[in-house]
Image 1: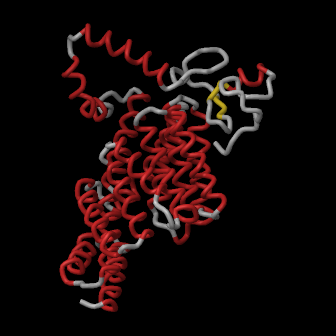
Image 2 (image 1 turned 120 degrees about the vertical axis):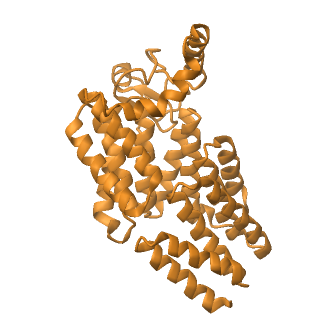
Image 3 (image 1 turned 180 degrees about the horizontal axis):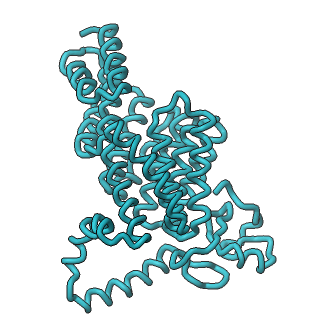
Length: 353
């Protein structure tokens, strides 16, 4: 299979995939891998397979194709291809919750010389790194990475990247319990989808609606939460996005639990039962985990540098400074200083996030 035929088959697979004929698209792309002698075409079809398996929740398969793509990039001896393949490897490990590996591969991406990282893919690398730091509960570094990703998006007019970063920021602020910001950022993502997303995949709308649903539930606005979650689930079902379907089911369970619909809330209980059985009756271990929780708060600097209270134990309005240190908004307003109380940087002007 030559270069022209390879391009035609890749395009055929994309058309099938966009019309939700996923299995047929995979068959076309796998045939290209078997028969094509065009290295560039093989590299591109491996990228399609990585993306498709990611959206289907087949993360081990995603990782397998990402590894093959790196080998192909090395054969091509092209730094841009190598950068793209390392980014796909970072994303694969992120999906598998191998967050330390994700960070390592992201740093490799940023260290590659002579690539387009600064102009095109740098923001995506920073986003993946931020998601990994968030998974590790290293909140300040997560915020720094999201801030960098937003800068890339704004400087390059990349609305798709901005939409993805806003959804990640929604997760960040939900975890530290600033529910107003947890709602603001996915709402911003939904606005971007409305303004620019006519040619985008519907997954961007589904993603923003899911994060809005989570924030609305945390704010106690259960009707709005249900409406957003239903919209997200509808799109996830149409496109076979199993990971998002699972997240929506958990959100539905939380909504019904908040309403007092105890039978439906058993969905969440089943998801948590393994951990419950492991810790059943082990009071000494339970106390050890409580101590460890407070140690982690100290390690991650997840407390207000002005009043000393922990951040994330209850809903409160927060403010992140350009240095990515986080404070209660009320404490900053009452403090009256012109520099960050933690690192003494001079600017108190809020950053992007």
